[in-house]
Length: 87
Image (tube, rainbow, N blue to C red):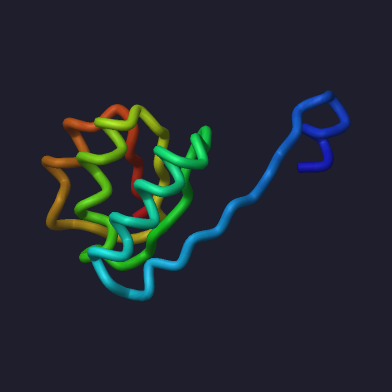
């Protein structure tokens, strides 16, 4: 953040709580991408919260990274140019 800001790029961190609920996860993602117009999303961490975000990332064209391990959605991940998993 400091390096980016030193070069004139403003960085702002917005946080939304998924409440460990898939509907709340989708609502939080849509709020960040539609209302706040974020450039990227990091999270969520549980596969049942992350899986519904894969098609949303493609639809919104917002790069999304999840630090979760999701072995059951491999084919979904291959189709997405906007979603990456760290696992």
